[in-house]
Length: 69
Image (cartoon, rainbow, N blue to C red):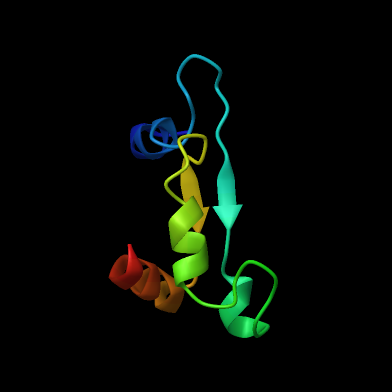
């Protein structure tokens, strides 16, 4: 990995363990309502958990999460 990728990756993984928890939440927009994703306020409540180090989401969901969080 080059320096830029290493810098970004270091923001995702715990430096002591080398592990991270990445949560994908993009399916709520493309597949319709799913358990835990009935509205954007639901995941916004649990995304502040200290174990979560990154989120993969559709840009529309990110905008909604930003509005609710």
